[in-house]
Image 1 (cartoon, rainbow, N blue to C red):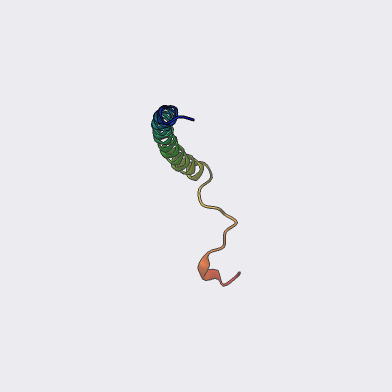
Image 2 (cartoon, rainbow, N blue to C red; image 1 turned 90 degrees about the vertical axis):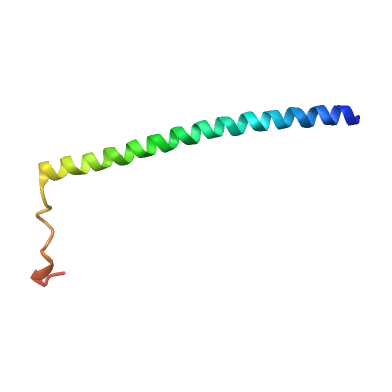
Length: 67
């Protein structure tokens, strides 16, 4: 391979790397957004379960001495 060909290939690979890194940044931002939404939904679901079922009746009080 000639020096010119190697230089062109190097430039093409750099451009491809830049595109890949930009796409990765977009996907990472989308993932962070969806993870935050998932955490919010888990909190809401926990609150709804608490409203519906209350405290777990099968759990023993810590002061009763049973394990």
